[in-house]
Length: 314
Image (cartoon, rainbow, N blue to C red; front, side, top):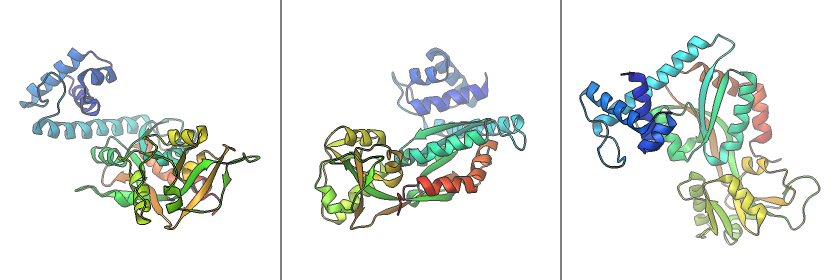
């Protein structure tokens, strides 16, 4: 039995919650995956997977094996990167994830990091805050970009690198397209925005919690006209019709080339939410992660933050 491969299959099963999809992700057949997991149970003398016609979860002992598997796979990746890299040329994968509204910033960071270090292969993932926290906890995410104010994991210490402060705009179609780019209009109150037809993120997204709370403060309860878990869908819905949306400045910055749109700063109340990069403290960093954390502190990246974090001329 290849212990490391079997551990990889277990992690894939936990991620996909389906035997067939986990096998496909591992490029093996479903019987091969099932046999490997049974061999793992024989090796440790415990039942790891709850038995049923479909996947229903792991046993208590299986959860403990899973935690070890996640650490083993990460330690293996760290070792491989150390063996394949030299001091100035890090090589290896770097799994980075962000809440949907921070994806433009993370994508820019990933592209600049990869240009600086061609040996690094970044993975840029969009996740809800809850999934982001889970990824930091089980080490499936190396570097997370999210809402630092809510990242308090029991028994785990995080280190944060503040990046920007989200503030919010009503995005709508302009009555007349501008000559060059999206227009920044006059401020609008949250109460006024809440009376408009809105496309908002789904309720499992922390951004939606922020928007709902701001509207509740002014006595407005909103039933969105459209809900989505994609910030791109928010912008496209506004561009395509008469719907409006509430977006942070960094997302408005990402669609500034759309001349038919305008963004109005939302006021009363003035809502601002800190966003930062986070890693789990006390865990040995891979060479790729070390390079990413070093790049975070360079003047080059700080200049990009100043330009694209969503202040929009404020």
